[in-house]
Image 1 (tube, rainbow, N blue to C red):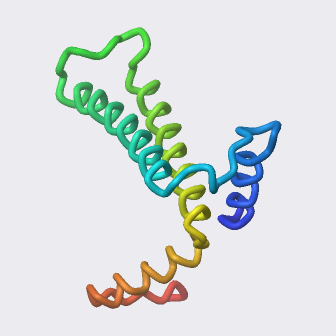
Image 2 (spheres, rainbow, N blue to C red):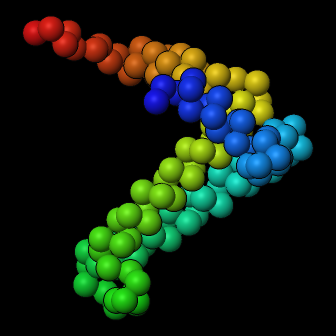
Length: 120
């Protein structure tokens, strides 16, 4: 699914009475950033647990926090970050794909990055 199609579906679910029934304008940008930050915090907690596994440190629940379970949970939390980010971008009046591409080009130029020709 393209970024634009996802954004349309994401907003429709957010605002639909059968979805979250929540207009984008009901939250301030501060509210949206808090939601994104909360999801990043949840992802960071999972990474902390994965680091415990990597380093052999006790503290995780072996029944519910196996490396496979944690890896899947991380995927879902990162998806939540993206979903909230997409809604926040729309609430701010931007198109995620457009601003992503512009910023990528600006940073690439700043650091002197030149894309390699994919045909070689």
